[in-house]
Length: 162
Image 1: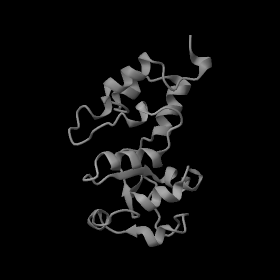
Image 2: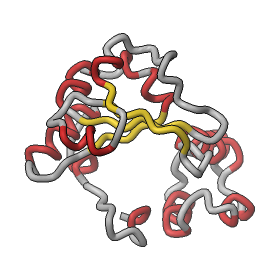
Image 3: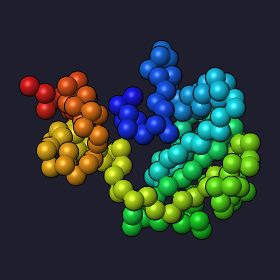
């Protein structure tokens, strides 16, 4: 949808919206691969999420069956030596070419994104103060996404609602 509207190389999938009940990343990725087996999917996640992976539902299966790209934000580089998962070293590849040459089970660690923004930061800011014009001008979110969040009062704490 809205976040991908100006990026034709990206496509939003409605899979999780259409699924009833709890939705886990491992199930979403399995369904995406089954629906389009000729596409190479790479699950991109931040370093903070990656380090919490052992707490995810069926996390070992997620690692075994998918390609992962782990990114850090400016000022927080991905330390190849301090990665918490013991399985990481055997799965790690050094280049995008090596990642895409594998069918699954590989991880690439990428050093810095240009944008320091994280989804956790956006949700926390919205829940605390809502989206402000300053944040909109800073380019935190595409304007269509910002408008949708505001219209539906998403991520707001209940005590902040009128």
